Image (cartoon, rainbow over all chains, first blue to last red; front, side, top):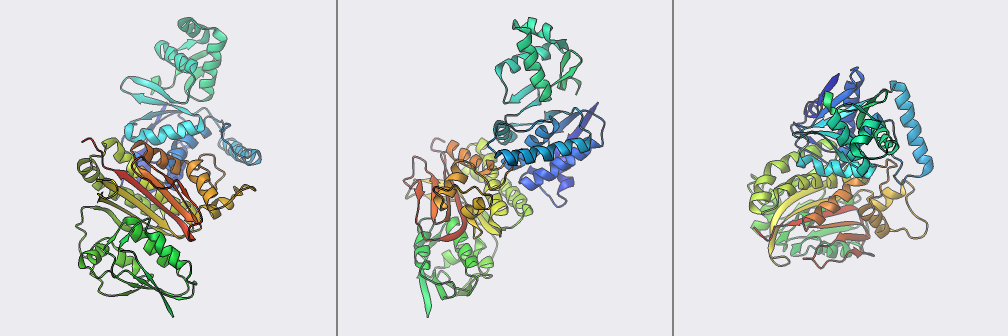
Length: 208
Length: 294
């Protein structure tokens, strides 16, 4: 159920004459994201591993296109926090929803692999800008990075420990009220940071 | 009558303003001679801005009297200045042949930026030299090397995204003994495009109360305002500002009649200058100093 996308390979396919392995410039980022979305569209797999292992660096503009827009479009959400004029935001949201409808939107999950400190400055900046978070694969296992509330971080760790659990079980583990834990879990599910099947929640990365 | 403007002996971001002050009185269609015969030194900004000035003289091709000092002229040649200046100036004097670029202080010779491929190329070329020169010779933290390449990419993208015409970039290290007593690495990016004010105006970002070049620079550099409606825009210069702050560097951006600067402790520059002589486009300089404790 996993689709593996090597960004280094996508970059070389996108820029025929590119001798380097740098994800730089907004137009390159847009082209790479388009290619990723094409690869995802051609696959029935819901979980996609985005692999940075063969990318030397990424700049802010490219990170905004490749990371932020990919997450925003996949989660079906829109950036509500940014200071955009209301009519313009409505236009953008309408464009997005049309796009989603045309693609037959389905649940898409991402795990980011091979991210290093060399990539992090730009990625952290765009996550903060849009209020986003993502699942990153580390030696210690799957971790959440980006903009999250403390209760979401705690709930994620609880899901990770259990592997698969209902909200009342996780609330018991955390010693917190079940409705609050369920709200945190549902928010993360809407952001595609954890999976949900019926009443059960499970970590995204565990099946990667 | 030919208008003669003397290029200062030391041509950098500050002294280039003298050239612009004299230029302000010269009509576009007037004959112009830029006399650089006694110029002995030029920063990356000085050379990039001089080329940009040549771009702006659309009506009559100006003449440039090249430096008489062999080492200066030779350096300008190695920096690719004459190669590109030939497109905009009638060069007068002895112009050295380009020769091999063996100058280890020049990380990136004057390079035209007009499309995305150019940026991929300059970032890749910088990375090849950056580890050796920035980390080993300037003692710049290895963590700052990647940020340096990101900064270079973002300031060059400013040309692609906003200028509406090509510009120039140059990167060099040099010993800034007089001002700082340390070596520095400098990125200079200059274009003669539409500038920040016109770029932001095109998206209706001009407030009714106060709007001029200084306000446009404050909006773009300090508040990350972009002409694009995409909420993800405007992060590039914000990222550059964060980077120079983190590594004790300096960022200055000139556009139209104003200049804004993020000024570190070691410098006494003005954070904002207004009512400067008009110069089209945008001119950006990033300076990162050598680490003190090595």
